[in-house]
Amino acid sequence: MQSPICEMLDVEFPLLAFTHCRDVVVEVSKAGGFGVLGAAGLKPEQLEVELAWIDEHIDGKPYGVDLIVPTSFESKGEQISSEDMVERVPETHQQFVRGVLAEHGIDSKVLDEGPRISGTRLGDNMRDEGATALLDVAFAHPISLIANALGTPPSYMLERGKAAGVKVAALVGAKEHAVKQVEAGVDILVVAGGEAGGHCGEIATIVLVPEVAQAVEEMGASTPILAAGGIVTGRQMAACMAMGAHGAWTGSVWLTTTEAETSPVVKEKMVNATSRQTVRSKARTGKYSRQLRSSWTDAWESEGAPAPLPMPLQSIVTEPAMAKITKLAEGGHPGAKQLASYFVGQGVGLMNDSVSARTVVYDFMADFLQATERLNSFTTEVAED
Image (cartoon, one colour):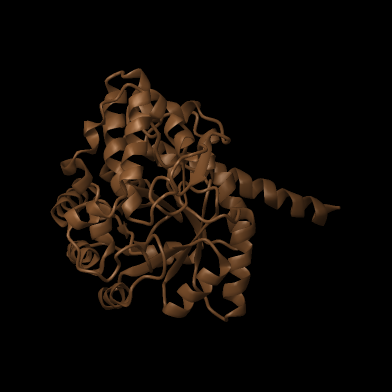
């Protein structure tokens, strides 16, 4: 395709797949798209294992890595231990979670010291020291892209990308954020609408993409745009490219693939969900993120629920509990099945089957082609008249 994304990343089709599953990364890249491994929750040694495996199986195809290095969050810039981070979590929040678990027949021992400390991993990786350690691992492999999921990438990420010839992408949810990213020197803008799974803004993709495209044009910049947010079909990708995008950044659609790491219980929920069965809330991470609605998300939205804590403290409260819930749900625990949830966008209503990642890429290509032919037919008919 004639897209600057294809030229920049050396891909056939400008479809990027954000995923926590190395198998999906490999299959998407080998099918002509571009796999991006989410590394925010990994230790450096874990990331090394994942990337080494990808290098061995991807047949030289390009791929990237995604981190979360937000501009601001609780304790940013401080030297603080995991134990001290746990101590900052109010007892009210721990008591609330214990109550939710108890109502669903789950022992609250999941909130003991050990599991809570493990929940600080995300926060550790958001600090410059943790992020730098992950970058050291990532840049030791033949990646073609490094992406920052929250805020303007730190200068050291931009500088390392430029020095290594690795493109730097950044996710944005508002026009003013996009302007700041372009001024900072990012290579690719990932313009994510509020329909997106995981961290997202509140502006719809159909509004945000042309708004950002116009802003970039008015700046005299040529920074390419990847549309994101609820995109799970080729026709949606084509629509976004008609509005000014140069490709698509996708995440949710890979969660129900046969290779995905998604819990079978959650995967089944997603396949059967409608587009109305997601909720945008701070209750999972401390920043707004969209996730599958369940008894867990309902509890946090109920009257009397405590206000979510700043990132990353909220993750210390939620992640150990969600890990236990998922494990119990996979074992058939009825209460855990009701609580089970995961990050997913509104496009979940179109994710009605579990197929291979490669099939998803090919379906995107076919649907994209059909959509563009349909769009072209309108102008052809006018010309003929």
